[in-house]
Image (cartoon, rainbow, N blue to C red; front, side, top):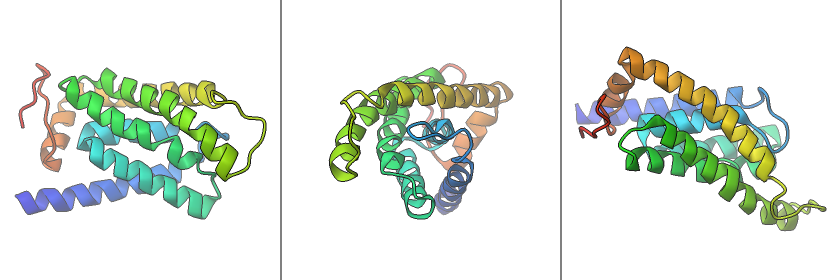
Length: 180
């Protein structure tokens, strides 16, 4: 069963990356990609912070290589993806904390890190240290809200626990206590 979990996690991660790349142009304008935040939160809840970080990194690199997206694809995703999983685990499975981790990680940290990357590495002029904060926070609220609605629906039907169990990740029952 342990090997099946590893294979299933790899396949699930691959599917999340593929979906993230395909849906990323939807509702996207520079500095805002709400669908990326949807994927980050869902992946963080299903698989934890490290897989979510890997997923966001792979999606960002693919988008930069094949879609010509600036480095915002990475700076605007990786911090939130990781913190989403960390906040979810620290709260013992409260989905709202996964969303808050995404908002804080991407909306604040990622936005501030994007300034020097875009100014000094890309050469974009006229930016301030907080230039991306309003756009990133707005995008994370939209994407996180979509993820929250989706994950609450899965929790109500009992599918969230089943998916987490099959993936071999931390499982949280209705009492919000980690089983594994």
